[in-house]
Image (cartoon, rainbow, N blue to C red):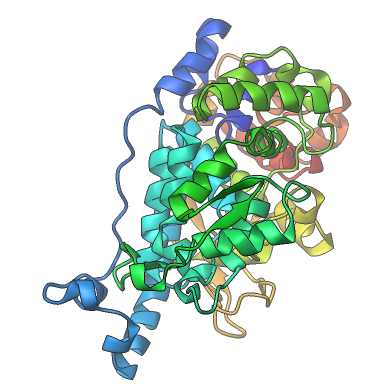
Length: 473
């Protein structure tokens, strides 16, 4: 079993051909510290917001008083159109960061929080701000992350807390904070939700996404939530949720499924992880180190047991086969066809993951991706039609160019010293997370090009990536 490969897939986006040899040469006890330390520097902030939007939403003047009513119909239309374009740019920029950044742990955890704090919002400014929050706090403190997300324009807008006023409480935000972000189902009552909603009255945002507390809309009366009574506001309500060990265990369980195993989840292990997470004051890195430093993380039942999400699959392919796409926006169509578009979760619960990633059409496309790239073929797919924003969808009947310039030299160099009769097996060990004892060597020999060493490396990688085994990590 390749422990290094397992670590890099679960806490990152898989091994990079260019750096594999330098990683493999290191003592195993240094792998996790290296992965951790390379993600400690603060992330670079992405800014793709068009000047037009900045001028309208972030301009000078009476900014504090601005809300949607201050914009006319044409300005709103212009913002929606530009937001869609900018959101595509943000999507592609983040994909590049996942692919090339040394901060693999940070970007992998940012992807986790992106699904945990799912927000489907066409406003590019809000989405860009929320992404900055999850990338900045991805490895930090969960309490600070929860508070920052809860006060973001993206989340307040998506969960309708702008409409949460003392005269007419809106329960959406309070319900999802309890059910999806902290406690999980079964650890609160309907009355807790109603009372919590009252605590969040008055929480809103300005047009530029800035958090604002509107005192006139806040219910200052006494509330009883989870057995506690007081004139709670939103911040105090979040404190009450964080004081519950169930919150730490809920996060530990969800992260365990994301990093370790989606189906085998021992309860005693979750309680141990959750309690240590709680006792640390919600230090995310403590939780990650407890997982990475355990023996069970590398147990056979946890290796190669996870179906790669579309983003994990695609970024992993790009790390193993460096390439330059002729049409980078074809990646938006690919995400749509595979069922995971960044910034467009299906609902507030995020992507369900696991076997939900695979159906007959998406599996066939997954298996074809390496050959499409190698053969410079067009991507002729139609995405699922549940996306009301139609992000990245090609016009009807139009194919997206999926051709790429492949840089095969790193792979050729990586296997330069491998005897030719062992080459396919060694490539399989590099690419597959599952054991290679069942490698169909005879079939691969027939479908690889033996005319030169370079051709053999290339075709072996393409054939091995086009297998069901490569869908697992």
